[in-house]
Image (tube, rainbow, N blue to C red):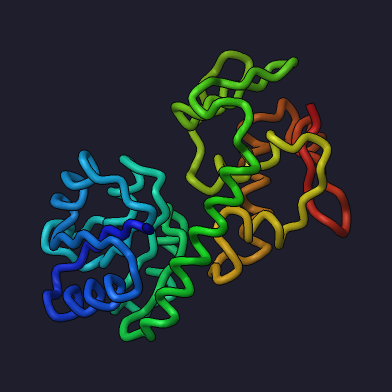
Length: 232
């Protein structure tokens, strides 16, 4: 049974979500604040989190970024905030999808299932080697999955959530060419607000962090007219 954690302080809307998902055979736990959500995650491991951004204990703080510091569980933001900038910020800080209230319950179910399919497919693709062990390149680049770090020439390199996900996918598939659309779908899904230009920006930032000469990259190669590939 799929487990859903709902973090929503509006009792009427939260109860409506809980009732619908329970009737659709989901196991549902609902809390009313980000703090309660973090506490719940210590003992409960959901398959997906439904997160309202306007919570009583996160004023001035993006709740998605707060949760993402503690878990990699897929997050679908459910918010009355319609600003594109708010959507972009949430997706950039770790959300896997964003739905604007009010929305169709049937669409919510479809998006939950889509996020879970993408997550399952990505985990299957990256099932080897074991996720907690650093994978050492024959040269000087190390991908540390446990700490979500890149290590280049012995130096630890911080990345954004999306940069690390792109690097992880490329790293595990050396020489395979990924189109920009494939990279978007792999880390965010078809219903993403991220466009192809954002992928180019992430690749540029990664090259600045790991390449000795970003203008002549040795690791992340551009395949003109198609996308990118990783070379060991």
